[in-house]
Length: 517
Image: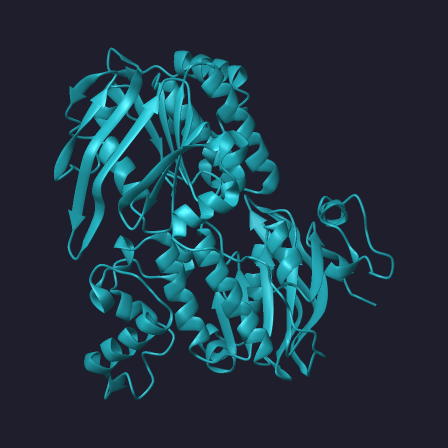
């Protein structure tokens, strides 16, 4: 059997944790090989070793049957290995074309030659169905388009072994379908793809074989066609997982959040556009209201306005009967609002702070955590250890772990712990399970339901249709910045929900401005 990649007995240790413990991975030429595991199982570490970002403590790597030493990404590229990282490595104020050629530029006589590069990029994008605008700025294109740019970067360098690290974590359902189609096309061309994921549906849809890791150790290798999702799930987390939500019927209580004709304008490149269009709705105690919509329809700006990250251009926001439209973020946080943000790195954590410091970001000014302006670190670290135990946050050095070094799932658990432990009246959760494994998803769903059942108000913003249907008491569909439907999940199908989200259906009785009447 000819393997294009063999990673044999790889061990990689970090302070306080063995990330890879004698792991072996073998990939055949032309196959899509899934690498499955919980957040923190060691998947990304193993691929960073293959890409030369980390050096293994033990073990060896063979490429096309020959043992190699991969000192860094340049050596990996020379061997035909390319990698799309979970958090894209793009320069936001460069164009698509500039990002693709960066580090592999054609230079003649001291001058950059971009015409040949442009032709090659356009040919590649046409051949593989990765249509992009080479002159668009990265900051102006969608996340799905940015991912296409990352894939084109690999193809431009003639990489034959493509590592995709959690490639669907930030994509819409439509973009995921497109990516799956692209992956099948690349494999048919003879490319070998290593696909890091924990989404079982996607593994079943595209992968040929699957290697499963758990807590840094190899659990097994299976043929995907002959293995059901339940078996894969149990291999991944070591127990049976139940993602079926059973919401106990209950009458909603008093209004906690009242939004009236909220309007937000976007100002980009000198143009003003209404991105939240006179939106009105109410969230009561004891209910989970979900805002569902395809990405880019105003959800992000709506949440920013509700949480104080941006000022609205019109309308009002009431929290527990008090107008907070112009109040600060801290005022909202100390008066009953908690926020699990969409981007955990940009708005959820300070990555270079310790886990303990991140757990008190919303409360460090309270007397128990500071005295006379000096932080009481003994109290802060004791509190952090309590949350680590209570919310099962896994980290190599406990409360002292730098947030940057934690897995995505455990970073998310830290944010959930910090926000829920403040005992809010309103919890705004935006894409709370994005990029998480089934075990962590089950855990976070349970936390949201517990908040609902404790009489709190929960506003959930999600792109995951199964999550929307399973977790919601009510669904508000947002399209082009307006609420177009107020739905009962028990009375509609996923297909009907999709029609509202795509804008091809609008509910009778919902005003054009978005007010439920």
